[in-house]
Amino acid sequence: MSIIGHERTWKLLCALHEREALPHALMLWGAEGVGKRTLAHAFAAHIEGREANVVSRQPLLDALFLAPDEKGTLGIDAVRELKEFLSRTPVASPCRTAIITDADRATPEAQNAFLKIAEDPPAHAFIMITVRHPDALLGTLVSRFQKIHVPSVSNEVIASWLEDAHGFLHERAVRAAAYSCGAPGIALEVLQEGTYRETYRVAKNFLSLGDAERRALIKTLLEDEQFDLQEFLDAAILTAYRAPQKNTALLARLIALRTDAALWNVNPRLQLEAL
View (cartoon, rainbow, N blue to C red):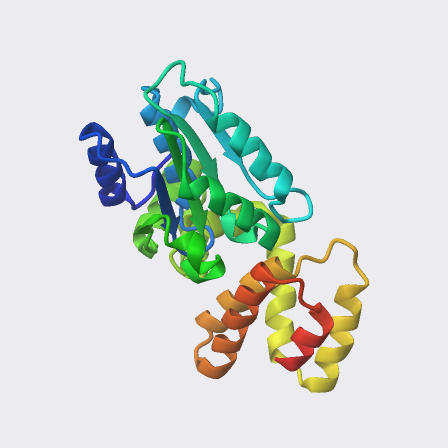
């Protein structure tokens, strides 16, 4: 588990831990694929005195990792699991560590239940969540967390990582880094995941079409039960951002829709046609 380009953030987290100055609740926020989850999982291992690169091979005794389900949401059952986990006494470290990835996909019901835990956590609890942006959560919940922004990573660092750690050719690594907008995870997906490359291709095509052609393509996309609106919007945002002549108004609408899609049960057809 490599921490790419976030050495300063990592040192800050470790220093807080060493000084016993960790808050009960900490939020890592930043763009999709930038490395928030990697930082959080590595830090959970660090708290328990483990090497970060053995997390996947050797389960931690005092850590819980929660993420959206197959439907892409975090529901009330996840919060119940969190509450039960935090109620137990630590066995291998000073605290019980809960890592919640993509917490901005929590349902309103789950966020309200989560708020009750965040307002009065057990003394030995440490909760770390990752989100794209704090505004994607209820304001009352956000106020319970100290926040650390996880910035984008330089293209040079990403390209070197793709070459050295994953063995990709220099040209492909440089191209993927350029399209990633500073997100190592996105760059790796572009090179490894055929489905992501296809989504990117469709998004690029979608943005180039006129209104009538877009409506026809939307109909085709929504006929696929596996269509993921949020994944499609991520690809569309990257495409619009990388365009030689940026359409800032369109980019702003895409980002706003992406935020709404993470928070609410929006109608994909109506929202895409409104772009």
